[in-house]
Length: 480
Ligand SMILES: [Zn+2]
Image (cartoon, rainbow, N blue to C red):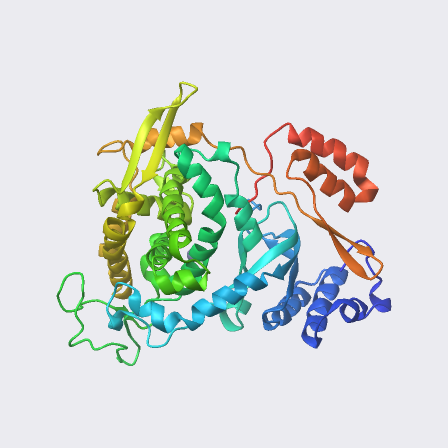
């Protein structure tokens, strides 16, 4: 729906909806937005958002309005954004297969049956490719609407923007910092397939797995409190969630990174599984290469993650990056030459680092380290053991200059070798008769400017001048 030809309210009721909607529900959704933009009504936008939630799994997904408040210093006023995305059908098919294999794959996870849900609840997850995302930044995933009353009672959608994530990882050889030359070639070849598999396992069997032990308000347990043994301590379970307690309410500040770490570990662990590999179409040597690159990229991500650690306040600013760093620490601790992390002098004479992984030890040393760690993560989570969980997670998250690796100095090296921010060049569409044509541009400053001037043709000259000026400075942020 174009907002430029802002319609006069009395002349257009429902027109926009009828022309562009795929269903009755979508018509009502668009009508809500139309009323909101015409009259400035937030209630109308909420009404449209209610229909949007009910519009489950559309092939073309869109949302528009004043949505995210990150850029408001007060944290309340929403910034205008709008996007159109399409379902990635191939990826969705493999994800569906993975869900149907859940009952075979979940028992492979390293915790006893009693610590797994009675029935697998498929997390709400759709992978979309963005056609256009208009706003000050393009997120890699979204969880909306932001209206809390609607989220609580009517729900929300959780969507991964696959091509945005893929861009974040796609890279040229010379930008692959901290890897050996041979690894760089393998990385470029297998990053896509291994990343796709890791995302699927992470989202569906990672976040979707594991039970919380609960005693409800009536005193009923969802486990046998008299006999259940904690597999880590070997003793009877002594803690659990009561009444309205939740994972987030108990683990508060570490909850989100801890859970990301658990999901990432599930990905690393299950990507070794033959059935999981075959669902994603990998067999023989190819499968081993996918596994190797998945693990290698995780340890490299752990090192790169140091960029998101603030030494002044000893705190992490990004849940996933902290999670990767924790996994790097766990795999370094496993020893036996599985992971090597060295500070070296770069070709330019400045500090550099090298991270390597011994591929022959993944299925032995690596697997058993992740197995033990993942079991601990799940059991501490399931038993609401906040003190134990914090001690474990904060311990591995600590960035210090003591011990075999000087992570504070490595952090400086990571900052020194940091890549320029990526530019996200977006495509346009144009009509050729009845057919829609996709217009793409080269991934460069020129491509970006071209994309903008073709989209906003009336303002092309001014836009080009502004963007040329901007391109001399730091390029815009692409991720949230
Ligand atoms: Zn996650």
